[in-house]
Image 1 (cartoon, rainbow, N blue to C red):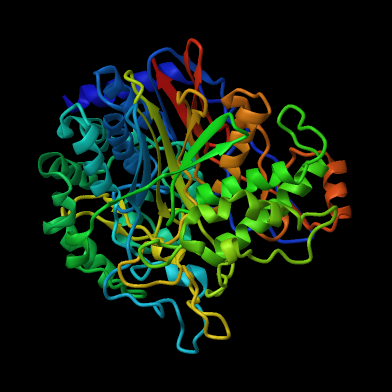
Image 2: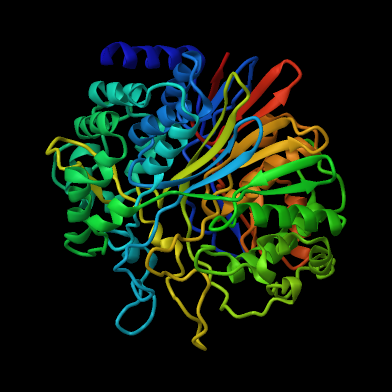
Length: 606
């Protein structure tokens, strides 16, 4: 049965896509160093976009999309398909997500939107000084993340189990069979995973990971298995079999939990504080989604804090509208006037993000509600700060007269994820963004206590907290680490509706650290404002600002645009921005899906 399942997946994938990757342009930097990217680029493969009539699944790897497609074809729900997709991603895209990570899931059941929070939590024994050195300064980022110190309590499996209990149609065990079969029989190592493994020196320091991803031999810099090598993961297959039989308890209790804790706390160079009690008591949370009307035509629903994504996206869109962005965008490529306005709007939004956004169970919303950041009067006040030249500084605002009680969080790296969008035959839909944070997480693998080769990687999500918990004056940062707290995220799973009749129009999302906000905003602008189909909107060049320089995707903007931005006072960085957008939009004849040409995702459906 397992061999037939794996063979069917491989056949389905082969019949769906012929990948023709080509090398992307080399990065070029002007006036500033490029930010550390969540995951390096691995080429560009043109995608056609996929039309379907009844249902569709968009995922970051063809084998994962095929697993979801099988569940939809068997009459499963969007949630059923998402479970199957995530379990295969744990095997074939281990750098981005898996059993050791967390997720945000936005779900539409045909009547209401629900937001399920499976974000990792800080262990009960952790405290705000976890990442401080003896002299009181924050650890260097890589020192903080490699090992057990940054591992939070994983949440994705409990999240999916809750969603399946509410919205699943197929038996839980059936949903795990494609991943079990592929883990047993193996999958061919692809170019993207090979590229990332070749650039992961810290991963080779973990004995389990080194033995699984790299051939035997001397040298800490030995290359990974070659492209096309069949990578089998018996340990993950066994853990998944236990989860199929017992549900999430198989991971959060018993030998799998004991192995996770032992590897975190027993790490030789950088032990963490995760405990068996932390795992046993973890629970996902249902939170009220935030739905915002835009231009009176669209209702855009996104995730509330601890995600900063929806609030930042909607602030940027609102500010760009108010500040009169300039010349029209042409075929998805904006000009200098528009990019200037967008960059200034982004700087203002990111200033508010750094000031206010954190776990709502620990930090109160400004003016008593998170939507105060989107109030029309407040956005008009903020838009008035945008002039013809770059602002000297972009300070946080004071929505509703909110006091600046927190210290703004200093900029620090935030990393990789994967995104899944699904619409089933009954019109139920979801957008789920899932993550282990840095590429390959904490560079720490658990075999679940099986003693078999392989396993799954653990997250380093605690480095999404502010490494420095206070500023020089001793004021606390809202997103500082506290026991049981969930770190702020940029993950932005999004569902779009017609504001006039309530019809679902689109599901979308992306990986990419804080640039997720810009990738999501670009896709919304492309489809809703610029008249592009969802594939062309995803294909359009990436851009944005995280509060500093203007970031432009290498080779995608004319030199005159770069020079015009410089003349307005901007530092400009041309660099790879390897988004991994997935999206599905409504058409009169059904659905149309798009996947990012910068990564290996596809859309499948009937």
